[in-house]
Length: 300
Image (tube, rainbow, N blue to C red; front, side, top):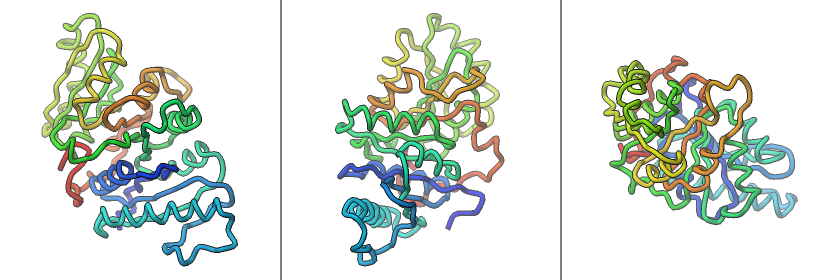
């Protein structure tokens, strides 16, 4: 069981047939954080804890409800196989609108894991669900492409997209992810003057980089459109960390066009964080244990 100070990883099970990317990412995050996993699925009817055996499903339940419970059961069994019994797993059927239900449940989570697949292209409702959860979640949201497999990304660095005036909490979150995976980080900034990156930007992030001496960090300048730069980076990194809105905005919790595009198109997992919320190290919990499940978003 996870320590009481460690919040669980929340994995939202959709209607996809193949959930390998979602389950892989959830197991990796839970092992790295030393936390439990909560599998949730949203369906009509009152919220309830899901039975741990299909034999306990009530025949009186409507067919749609039985299907939802069976989907959660199958995901739970596959997740337990992946974690080899080393991570506690709970399942819960939620009631209400998808975005509202998952956002409400995210309040007690360390991270929310979602899966995005090619079947979502052009499906505005599903894309709205992904964007709505990422925009409003109380916890960081990790959106994983369905084609992603953790072994393919073992030696690739974590990448973080930064503004010319960077949100240090976003940079710190990326450093924490790099620290528990490959130990390498690329800070990518799109600017007209590359010299700015080598001087002003590097100086601004230096205090945060000094907190992670075991992470090899590289500051990279791109010219052109931020979407193009970060899409290119996503093909070469293990995960991409982004702030969900400009950190200087006083109110609101929305996604900009760059984050929306990357949620739809990035080749790697995308971690969307609220720049106004301190990173885990700022909040004071103990450093997460090294993974007990082999591999990681960037390796072990």
